[in-house]
Length: 345
Image (tube, rainbow, N blue to C red; front, side):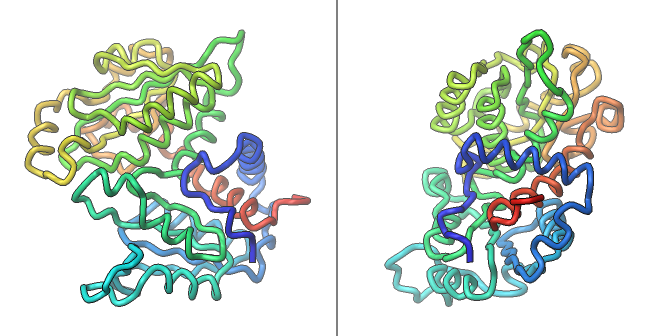
């Protein structure tokens, strides 16, 4: 088994050197799918989903299979049961088992655990602590990968960085590339995890990031501070745009994403009312034309003609399919890194 210290709960768990190594290996895996074909022969990866998934589950399971390993894919409420994650609890409620026990048992069966927890969605103060994924990392004796918690989505951020590098290449003439992280309207807002991870990752990579959202949809204050610090260290910049148009103006990349109001977290009525006041926050061709030959990114799922128009999604500006496809080589590279199988490839 690999050292349990090699967890990926947030992208910042990877050093700059390790992150670069993973991205370079992902490039090679993208170019040649036969590389590492048997690298995980005899290895087993456990995938535990406490809420739904399309791209993450499919790409992770495919990554394990293409590397010659085997994935055990379990979904809560159909394959197992609710688990308690808080220490010291008197377990006389719904959960018949504690993560402390489940993690130790699963560590006997698998070489790596990937977990998508389900936030309680009552208090942002509680859910931002990511106590569930941290409990798995604390009690498992194998590496634990976060497949999207309340605060972070490191797998999406890894694929996003890969997509940005392929789309923009270098920075000719020393010109800094500009990315607009733009809130978009949706009747069912997505979690903030992908937006948080993209914000910090892009600032860390040295981009000029413009953050655009309506009042009441501010991202987590500590995450924004973390992103600003990363921008200062990398030579990038974080700018708060006053509206969608000024955010997109001159941008090379428009990263569209609906996310929930943290001020109204857990209050569906207030959150819906706030979203209803910002239905004009939508990406269309007219908005995209404000950019610098701008390309569109979105973590998906995307509500067509609500968040982004068909014209943009199906046009040459869209990077959505490339972005989703990037999950496969990036997760293959990550698995090889965390399981010490990348040497010699």
